[in-house]
Image 1 (tube, helix red, strand yellow):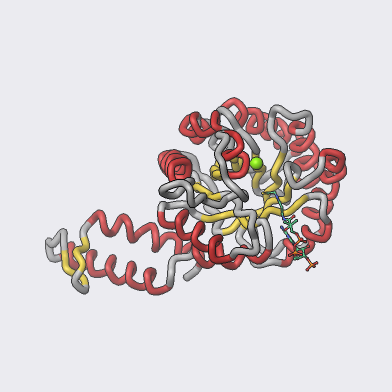
Image 2: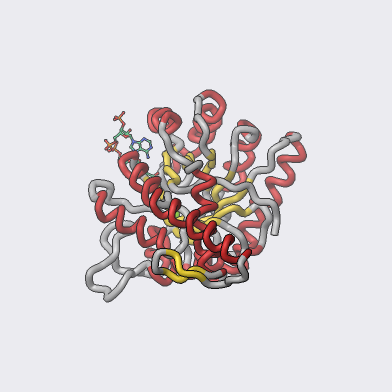
Length: 304
Ligand code: COA
Ligand code: MG
């Protein structure tokens, strides 16, 4: 496994690259990760201009500590190569990652990987640019394991439920919403499948958008579902969703304190030759400590 940079992705805020106003607002916000969009939030007749606006925003705004990403058009479009070349040439040293849309196979990711190799060499960039990849086509979901394995630039996969539901011809109302007609969580299988592939290959699994931004309770429910099955964060398409995602995807302080206490008790017990112990009425053993370590690692990253 490569030395992938460790980044917080409790929330990834989507910001249209054709809006100076929204990019300025996003720069000032407290959020782990922002991606400036060249894809679906930008009308085709604005895409060329938006590249320049993104380069300008990356170079001139004070972004505070956050991961900076640009979302590009997919490899089947006429825009993809120019998106990468213009943004990396103009602001490659400010950029942490490029997010590829609608990947169907490992070849799509390798196109981005190889173009970044060439640009970084040509421009003499010191910092290696990572790749984030949307799984939002049925082909991408079927190939998720080979996609996750294909590039040491990959840092995360995102389950993009908007395009995914279209690709599978699912019958849903708004992007990201479940459906009462379906007995169970309609997103269970794809989220689960993608999360497993990410964990096998050391990538962060991220959950995609929830379009009805006037329904914070339902958004929170979706965050809790992703957090519970091991995802690291969720997209926000509107500022009002950011705080909810950041909060749900941070372990509660009580859980962090308890994890550290149980781990310490277990380590002490090992010295006495005990492999399984009783901590406040709960059995703690080596498997427990593996589970707790995930909470402790996340808390350490957040600085809790
Ligand atoms: N990033 C930064 N700022 C945003 C924002 C975003 N994603 N979405 C809204 N804002 C700003 C608005 O400009 C507005 O600023 P103001 O108070 O200074 O005027 C404020 O937040 C409140 O916005 P609101 O009026 O409630 O929403 P809106 O009607 O302006 O915008 C959307 C609604 C959905 C069009 C807008 O949120 C949006 O474009 N979201 C991103 C869409 C996207 O990226 N889609 C692709 C990925 S799925
Ligand atoms: Mg999409």
